[in-house]
Length: 189
Ligand SMILES: Cc1cc2nc3c(=O)[nH]c(=O)nc-3n(C[C@H](O)[C@H](O)[C@H](O)COP(=O)(O)O)c2cc1C
Image (cartoon, rainbow, N blue to C red; front, side):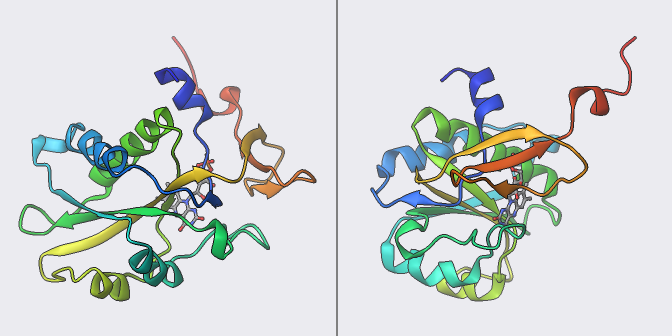
């Protein structure tokens, strides 16, 4: 998959096949995040990779899925097989929004080349996850989890017609409305 295909075809996937991911592939995603553009090159993020099934099982109840879908939460045999926790290192700076955006986007796009799909999760109960991972709360902020796995769901874009809410169609495919190019391009000179 080339870069423009990845940019156009990446969709959030929330149901995963249970085949484990090769550790080297998951670690390589962190390498992509390491090489991102960061403001003032401060590189304030740290990452934790979780593939152990027991730990993944403990994390899962602290995540929320697909707020617009009645049945969007992965069932037991559809859960992510790996997570990457994206952490802000408060000894370097104290705000991380731009940085986490860059890092997560690189990891999501890079994953596609390996056949790995993802869901960027912000709806987290952070404290229990920090405890499960034995992370130093003084030093680190848990920004996001990137949930990973091989796909057991399809998702595609559809035309925006008044609602931004994604929905599941009769074939169980997720449809994600995207505002039109004409709407978002204010002008070209
Ligand atoms: C910062 C951020 C946080 C998100 N948090 C969640 C989340 O907690 N749970 C979830 O199911 N999806 C989450 N998503 C995924 C969005 O719902 C998804 O990106 C959006 O619906 C557009 O779909 P697409 O990624 O397929 O284009 C999050 C996305 C972003 C960028």
